[in-house]
Figure 1 (cartoon, rainbow, N blue to C red):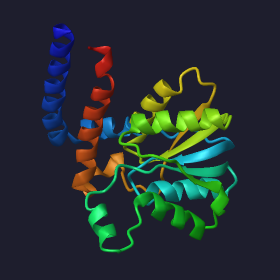
Figure 2 (figure 1 turned 90 degrees about the vertical axis):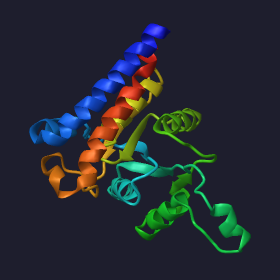
Figure 3 (figure 1 turned 30 degrees about the vertical axis):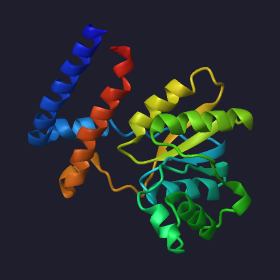
Figure 4 (figure 1 turned 90 degrees about the horizontal axis):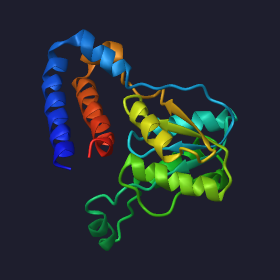
Length: 213
């Protein structure tokens, strides 16, 4: 156990050091940024799943997929409860969370209401999203799912869903949103984009932590 923790700490230090290198080495950073983007060929699927965050770009991608007939349903997650919601409600002020706003947007773009599902409960990570949709898909005998997410999040989504859906018999397709402005070739246009690269690789390292402990 101590050896595993030592390796994990060493890797965290290594990636932190590499983070500085990324900032000062554009070609390396661009190469690593490109490695985060997974865009798999789409086939007709039972549903398109909108991962939390990245709204509205992710739900817009899901809407397009639905409207061209490549998915029969849109599935939306309810993420962690936003801070301050209870106070808002106690003042009798209406507040729609991201899941509800995404559902409304989908209806406005022509998605039938009975083809939109907001999963019950709340999820707090990509892993919890994958576990929740796996249970839902198995219960509904789905054979294929399209996962709509952000470009920089697509590699970690692929890793997570492949692990959770292993041996499930359900085909999972990762589709990054074309409405997401993340561009590995032009990271300098937005400072936040190169920060996304560093953050995503740190999260990918955390994804593998169980293999070291």
